[in-house]
Image 1 (cartoon, one colour):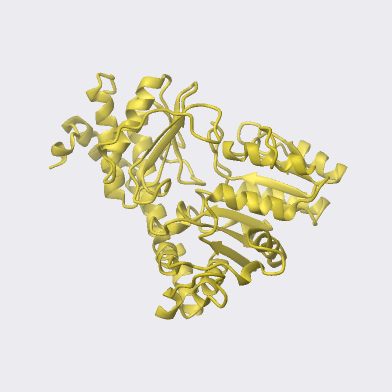
Image 2 (tube, one colour; image 1 turned 135 degrees about the horizontal axis):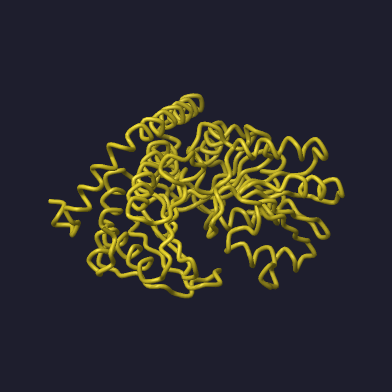
Length: 421
């Protein structure tokens, strides 16, 4: 059966050898999954989720019990005072944009301490000129780069002592860079040091790709606000769109009034039939994230054995679901991404090619045979076409489907006369 998918015997045999080696890693992933499942189940029970919460509203969305209860569920799971969970958010980038415009005012300073944020925020911040950017409203931006994936603590604390910082942003996931994703332990340490100097600075965490990877979320170690997408981890591959902002109540309310209108905030916003899907998504999310991590661990070890540079390595502690593979030249990178598409259930006959994707400086190839467009929690693989030609792979709704996608991608490289074995 597996050969009918175009996967070679050699690749299957390699995967079987690797699975024996990575078994203990899978056991640790399952332990985290069980812990997070307990959190989710308790939040459902404490908030008495019933069929009535699946009902929909239209128009203004006044009195949407399901929507309001979903936000209580998310707040409890993420250990937040409040949460804004809405299908009106187009993406994680949109939610980050709403948060930044909600919290910052003209002449305020935003400081990124994890280097330059993800490419799609360039126009939002004003790194790339845009008449609707934060910069165009007189909001100033500064950044302090990481040093070998570590916070530049002396420089950060020096800048905080100088004053006039309104908000510090930390992007946990690596984005399209080679640095490591940022662990909860590192975040906790730097937040403590910053708050000793200025407890009023808003610490905002871009938590995309990171939820449920560990047992602890950033709000539990001192962050003020976290932001993430529902077509990544917490949507469980079921939520059709949306994002969340969670944290301190007054900050969540500011974000709500920016998303809707001042004076109405969280009171409006119709659910339009997605309440049940959002609830099902968060319910399945711990298991789906675990499957994504297992897929990444398998890919990491297999490709490392085949001679490619990978990050994280299979036995390294992970902070997000992203796996990088450095191919060194564009052809192999493209063939791998195309193989991921071929191994998908949706659009398997479609051949992705690099293109000028809005919001990015380089051409991007994006493979995603997904039920939901752009869903990164489903098996996907994308990359900017620039040296050293690194693929960023994430997702896998089930480990079995994720595994088949990886095996197909490697087999596709062999089929195209690329020497991987």
